[in-house]
Length: 188
Image (cartoon, rainbow, N blue to C red; front, side, top):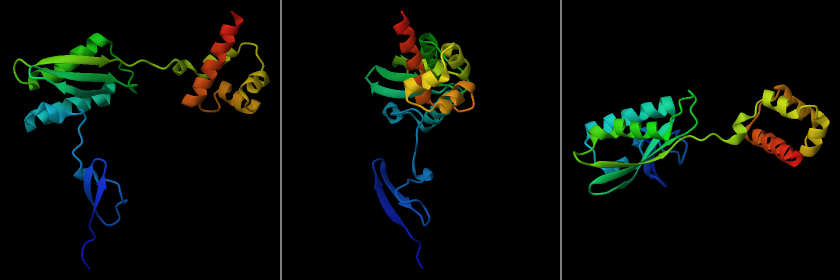
């Protein structure tokens, strides 16, 4: 019996599957993934490419930073650096993001190549402040049943969120944030 092989076309290219592989799922060893998006536009040597990949992986791992080459001009390269929510709490301002790009790319680019940087620092979402303690503070003397009625929810569910017994998903945080914000604005 011969070995089963087929070729699958996906949006990112052609991949061979092996018996037992989920059809349509590219196998990791067949994909050359890059932490820095559009890195191939820089036309770096394999050693420089490996160095850049390692640096970018470290920034992604410890500070949730990602890089993207937006454009390569004859004398300059345009690079976007963006910070996402960091599990380690390492957040940088725009000035530090500019420094990080220079630290990461300067010695790998050709002599005289300028870097134009488009920094996007992390900006937390307003509902991120919602915690059970915040809910208790915002609630004040308002009865749980009244809050539940206003939100169209069961009072036990609202009580669970306020008491910290139920987890607060992003949608639930947003709901409570905007609910209490609208109540506070109507008081003015």
